[in-house]
Length: 231
Ligand SMILES: O=c1ccn([C@@H]2O[C@H](COP(=O)(O)O)[C@@H](O)[C@H]2O)c(=O)[nH]1
Image 1: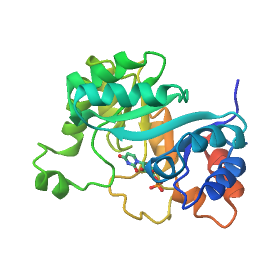
Image 2: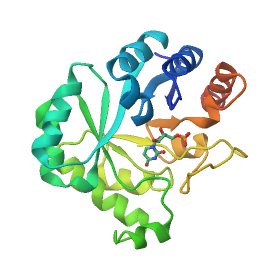
Image 3: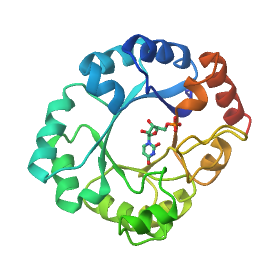
């Protein structure tokens, strides 16, 4: 059995060398490395292959949050499927046909539907006209996404128990917005600690700046992993 923590370290770095150094430092402790928009839009396929190699062969989570008409999203999924990510994100609010198109375009890739961004507070949902509260919106979008073929869901750790009740077992629940006690929130709003997120049913925790912003990235990853193992 793997002793790697169920953590995807978010490699949101200003250059590829930094992203790969973080992947190398955190790789011994985490199951997954996450390549997001900042790195992928600049470094493309090199970022995916480099993060995989530097981390010691960890799963790659390609967080592109695709959101377009179904035909365009299907094409985008086919374009990146050759990079063999374990997870690839789309926005659940793109709707049933878009998620279905993504899932059909590359059945070997786990399509992950992002429900309500963890940076959004309740007032932000009202402002964009998304019927809330966030916990209800996340439940609704998760149910729709799974029915359309998503195999995993991104939601706030505060909503993960409700989302689990909606989608049942067998769907991977991934929670960004994870902050060790006392860590800076930055732009995140709906957060919980790593331990609480797992206790509430998360399968994979996305953690970026609390690890990559540390003076010693390896030590930060090791400390979080040890805290989770000790639960
Ligand atoms: O709702 C979402 C969806 C994705 N993210 C991504 O997760 C990481 C979080 O990084 P931190 O530094 O730990 O805040 C980042 O790459 C986001 O793009 C999210 O935060 N919320």
